[in-house]
Length: 241
Image (tube, rainbow, N blue to C red; front, top):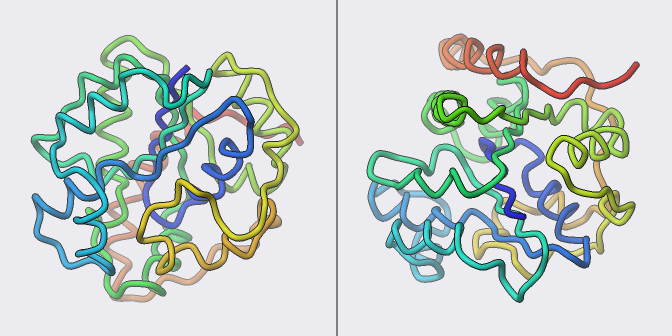
């Protein structure tokens, strides 16, 4: 089984990778299209040169690896993907060969978290429009997209991971609820800049509180992102209360 987990930044995506990475039957890969994205856009991200040296810039080569044999012959290959990396020219046909899952989070939470690391994010930075486009693409192929909300995962990790595994046809493993402190051997080279909090964790953080305030300057970004979020939210796996 190959699982492509589609997320924007600041959205529990690394914790989810660590969760699956703690399964003995699972290999993980961290944002394999990141170098392609930076090379083609020219964007100046933290640790840009390190990323460009660490990964292939050839989108076709990366895509072939995502749909090819699972690493080390394991049963499950979990792929952590950032939706904003899927720019024009990056192939999508390989997505027909994987189980596509969409990890969503309320835009206000994403914007507040992203802005603390990198100033003035735009809609394209936070990935909602790209996530929505990929959601529509998969739906158009006749697949039923699997959608999970990070808020629900933090409310009840075991229940939501059990439901996620059931939705994709994978047996749940209790080892998905925790992981060793200090990161994963498959972390991207950019991890020192972005993964500090999750490196210090051994499991999912507790339930989220009220929505954060979004600055007046970023209200337009929030307004642009909300329709994309609401569309996917309507298809999400629901939390039992």
